[in-house]
Image (cartoon, rainbow, N blue to C red; front, side, top):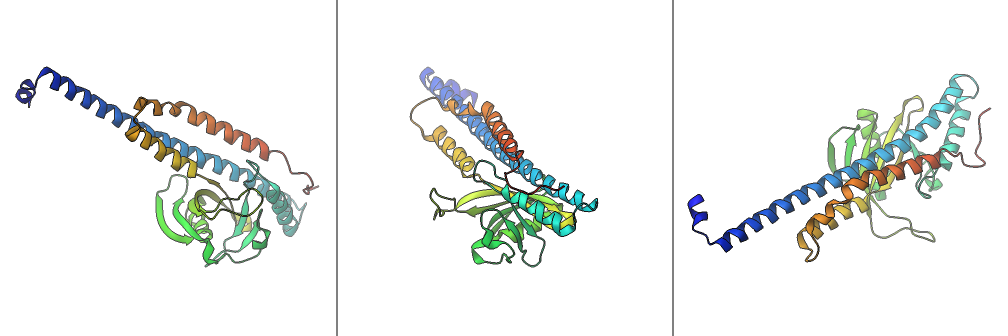
Length: 262
């Protein structure tokens, strides 16, 4: 190998060195982008979990009033549902509550589609789950078009909480939804005292799209240095943390008109 390199002309050696250096640089950038994708995804998981934990705290509060004898169980449930139903973050995102019914659960409360309340969630349009993760550190398991509400119950039955990815349309201005489906990530957690599951989801197509677009830029863009894509690594966590903090702050304000226990 060394003798072969010695037989190369100076120009060829320089060219080979430049190519090897470029390949090494591209490999570093590629790995950095994968790390950035992981950070962004992890931030979305944490944000969604914190939001659902806030909704769970509402149930804890009213369950505490039930145990103290201040409210009956039915009154406590009704007031908890009313508060959670009114919670919003990022203007349009919401929470839902379902039961642990088998083989298919029943909707206790859906904040934006009240027509689902009380119904068994067995319609074919709900067969959109694509991955399940039981617990915060569980392995992600791919599925193909599984009922997403059944999937929510599966992860909480295994670990008490977890994540489910599924395909879902987005709302459009003026009403209605898109015909295209987008990837959404939901965190769900079991509320054992009442046999409920509380969840909320956020779209992550921007995370997936960002990762793919940046990888394409590194490999295919004819202009600009390839390392320029690495710069977001420093600010991604701060931006997401700020967004999460803002969302939690918005939830701390009780919606006007909702009942308060006395």
